[in-house]
Image (cartoon, rainbow, N blue to C red; front, side):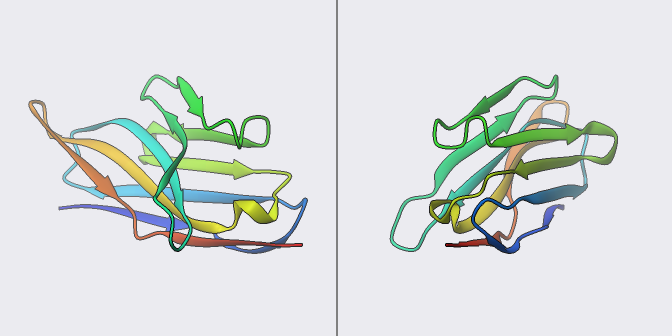
Length: 120
């Protein structure tokens, strides 16, 4: 049993900031990659950012320079600091984690999603 619990979403004006958090819990041996994805109704879920266990990051072009992904391995938590938010950032944001429940067994998990709404 592994759960990803997200928090930090909400309503913010354009130009503002939000910080999303996602904590993994359960039968965790270790966590490899963690990431954030977002989805707008009628569109496919899209990649936002990922971070490896060692701290290497990757960002979608649309958020480079504005968003920062980070993680606290001791807390099994990944963060997404979102600055200079734009209305087009409005979406449901989902946390993702590649979790090793055993040394030789790895599963992919998703959070429940948290709504981010940026008003103009």
